[in-house]
Every structure is written in structure tokens, then in C-alpha cells.
Image 1 (cartoon, rainbow, N blue to C red):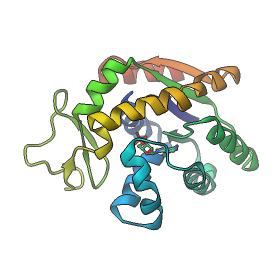
Image 2 (cartoon, helix red, strand yellow):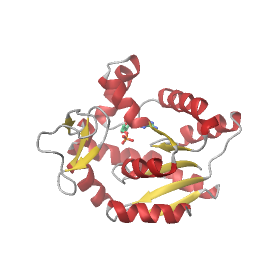
Image 3 (cartoon, rainbow, N blue to C red):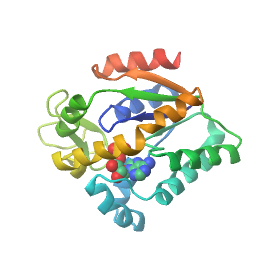
Length: 214
Ligand code: AMP
């Protein structure tokens, strides 16, 4: 199964991806997570991406396209994959089509996580994230450990800079202006499946498995 997860920030793509990849053994890439790790390591990629991410903007296409191409080249031979947070605009979608064609592969489904903005803002503003491995908690729905240390890797649990109110607003504008159009793009290709992602995590996961018919 070769999949893309599409949806607004805070729609729950990362949370559902964690479950699905564990169950279905898919190779997984979250461009956002790789960029955060690059920033943490102060690598050249991180230094180039930081100001865009802090402002809630998309980082330049060439940077993320290169990341995904490298991931696909390394992983397509080993079974299915899941792309989370990529593509995020039509240029990236076109680049993905070209890369997959070159590798003799194609997408099986694009899952669109459908959720309204009120829920998204509540999820994002309460989200807390491990700086080490990217695991997420939520101050209301699944509170982090009191010592703010990750139970998986021991990393520090923090609020992402881009989960602060002003940046959330910018990310939603970027989503509406650039990413939302991809639903139509993949609908035309008859790849889009919609999942109502407004429910709690377990219920959304059940809906996801049903939508994927697996
Ligand atoms: P995410 O963790 O997917 O919400 O991504 C966090 C941030 O990383 C985004 O707001 C962008 O600044 C950047 N980012 C992640 N994926 C992409 C992408 N495909 N294209 C451009 N920027 C991205």
C-alpha cells in the first residue's frame, strides 16, 4: 500500500500514521518531523528551514522535494510507504508524480482527514511534543507525564513553536491557500478517500482502516 495523508495541521495525520505504520509495516516519512530534527541538530537543512517553520510558512519546495526523493529511492523497494505532510501544494504533487514514475511506482490512496478549524485550533494549541522522537500528547485529552520527559526516548516534552496561537493562524491560512486544493487534484485521479477525523483517536483509526479496506 502506497499512501499519502492529507489534511489541515492538527487533523491527526501524525497520530494516525503512528498507528497505521506499526500495524501495517509501512515505511514512513513526515517531512515536518525531519525538518524539526534538522533544526534540533542545527544542520544546514535545519538552518534553511527554521525561519519558515517558525512563521508557519511552507519551507521552499526544493528542500522538501529532495527529502522525499531520497526517502522514496531508499524505501520503495521494501514494500509500502506512507507520506505524511507531503505533498503540500500542487508543485510538490507534480514532483511526487514524476519521482514515482521514475521509480516505476504509483500511489494507491490519498487519505483526506476532514476536520473543522475549531477542532484543529483546540488540538494544536493543546499539543505537546517530544523534542527527541516527535511523540505527541495533549494537555486535555492525553496529558504528558508530569516531569515532561518522554516515556519512549527520555526527550524533553515541549510546545512546538509553531503550535502557538499566532503561528497556528498562519498555518491554517497556508493550508487553505495552498494545500486544500490537493483534495481536488487527487479526487480527479480517483485516489482520494475521505475520513471524518473529528472523533477521538481510536474511532478515527477504525474509520481509517475501513476507508483503506484493510
Ligand atoms: P507538520 O509537522 O507536518 O505540521 O509540519 C510543520 C512545518 O514544517 C510546516 O508548517 C512547514 O513549515 C514545514 N513543512 C512540513 N512539510 C512540508 C512540506 N511538504 N512543504 C513545505 N513545508 C513543509
